[in-house]
Image 1 (cartoon, rainbow, N blue to C red):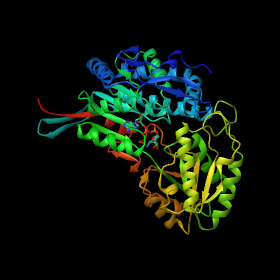
Image 2 (image 1 turned 60 degrees about the vertical axis):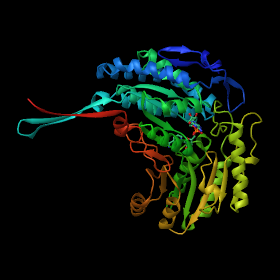
Image 3 (image 1 turned 180 degrees about the vertical axis):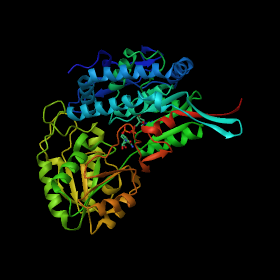
Image 4 (image 1 turned 180 degrees about the horizontal axis):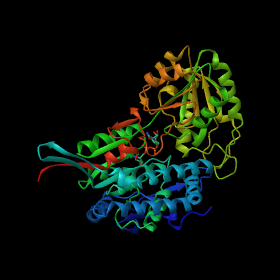
Length: 485
Ligand code: NAD
């Protein structure tokens, strides 16, 4: 596997130049499937962030005036380049994140769809007029970009999540500073290279690698007007509170604990396939992962038996190998944390029906086999906390009302699914489930780019979600003109 030449010592991208960080702090970026170093990422300073903010601020002056169809054409060209480099990008995702190549290809596709949505910017940015609000007086609403936008992203989707942010923000006329996850930073540089190749002018997209210092720099910088964040709940809350206190627009997408309800009339083939994919795909490191199943009525025993059997068939290993479904978790520390949760689950009295520690795991890298707990009770730590690993909890409930109550007790509310043949059950679930993204008879109800990614409760901080019309609202501000001629 070849990685871009830059990968050995990642550079920042500031004002259209690839520059070495001035920081002497470099972090190793290992391939989680092998432990081998892919390169190093700099932990850049606030001063470097400031340079990027100044470059983005300068570029904003001309980019905001660049005709909208010209901006759209760059998006079309970018989309084409991303399609041409689909396999290369997917390989990059697999080596830095660990997910299977097939899932990485899916991620690239999701990223491309964001660019496709952004290419519709001439329609998306239209305003509205009313010719006669009073005798001889008219009113019009015009949309303008916000200014310099900062984006802070997590490790689990090194392409898709950045693509939720910068293509639409930039298409709307903003300039952008991206701070990728320091645990999966390679893809961001390739995305910036390809955008430049598509004709994006210097300074419109900047990439500053790092961790806390760069994030704090973004939160404080007076020239940065809006911040898109995706990551864990405590950091989302921190970013939301601090950025808002500094007068910035913020959307902060956070952690999750997604429940799937399986009704007694569910088609079990569909349910098991959907749950296995959602619980163990991407090693459970998805904000839309299914981490709790609520088995309703007498379906529980058969469902659990089938989930265990299906898990036994899962091929674990390096995501670049054919047929591998379950790759590693991101780091050794994350593996330790996951094993800690498995021990907690046993101590809490949940029944460990499949122990992923006992799988035949590769010696190198940080693997955990599919793990399933039955008889989990709401309130247990393994039910409550986001483990973000291939660990699934099964809770039993007597009926749908109780199942929804269990799911609604979670402080997180990203997604929830139901498996059933009953329209009545679907309707009750749709009306009563306290979550922002629902699925019916499918595993991962992640909306496409033209709809909002609409988590609720502690899974989201802010008002306007990422993607869709919410994204356009977030990255634009409105000007009202009322006129008598
Ligand atoms: P993380 O919170 O550790 O990191 C996210 C970003 O915040 C990174 O860029 C990191 O450098 C920065 N960061 C981390 N700690 C910080 C601190 N103390 N101060 C300032 N900045 C800090 O998240 P992660 O582990 O990379 O990603 C996984 C998390 O992201 C999970 O909780 C997952 O559910 C969530 N996620 C949510 C969504 C969603 O749409 N709701 C999507 C993807 C991932």
